[in-house]
Amino acid sequence: MDTTAETAPTPAELAETHRAFVNTWECDENAHLNVQFYFKRIDEAARFFAATHGGALDGALPHVRHVRFHAELHVGAITRILSGTIADGPFRGYVVHLLENLETGALAATALDTPNGADGTRAVPAAAVARALPRGVEPEPAVPMPGEAVLAANGLIASRSIALPGECDAAGRLTEQFYVARFTDAAPHVWEQGGVTIRWLRRHNYGRVALEMKITHHQAARAGDGLLLYARPSAFSGKTFRLRHEMKRLSDGASLVTGEVVAVVLDLQTRKSVALPATLDTDSACGH
Image (cartoon, rainbow, N blue to C red; front, top):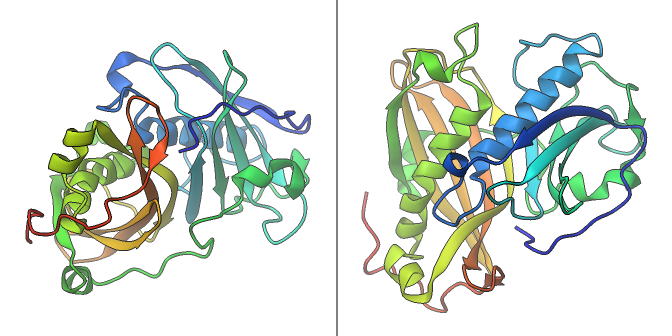
């Protein structure tokens, strides 16, 4: 996450689709808005954008939702989201969302959704929303990995849970927020598995933050489903740590969603990203 505030002219073509306030209970151990609540806001904005441009408020989640995090949001921040479609280039027809901090004017996050039929609606040139375009994760839909392959690649089952009715929409489908909530709860186990341990983070007063996240939806999880979340550290490069999540349905093993994440370590005093440890602490990492 780019923790420095950055402002840019807002494209006039975009429509306002959401306003919100950052509550204390939405923030995590790093004292900023947890990523599940970025996704909650973005998904609500996407639904209002669809509903006001010929689509359905209760439609299915996009095949792929690609989110980039640009600046932290802290308790008390007021936000809005502006939405539209991309007019040109390889992402023509994709729906774009800009999440802004209204107090500072900073761009907090951006999202890019696969087309929903609103092509040409509130269209904006791709160059005007360049910060929303994929950078660290490939834009194509992810091909799900079998759970056994995740385990064989230094992965683990990082979460076992049941989709609760209160986490689902009116049609009984798990909402985007609660897919991502499971990813964020599982992530510390994946960092530990990869050798970036809680012990090392606490020693230096560091935290973990996401820079970019792509969610590929394969099938919808529904109320009552048992959910297995397989996860693994997938790559290390300079300051970045990559994670992959594969959610399966317990009853039949069906692939539900794939999550791909690029993350960094954050110095909680300076709020700047720092390098990963030169030698990963794999000796103290938990096994699977």
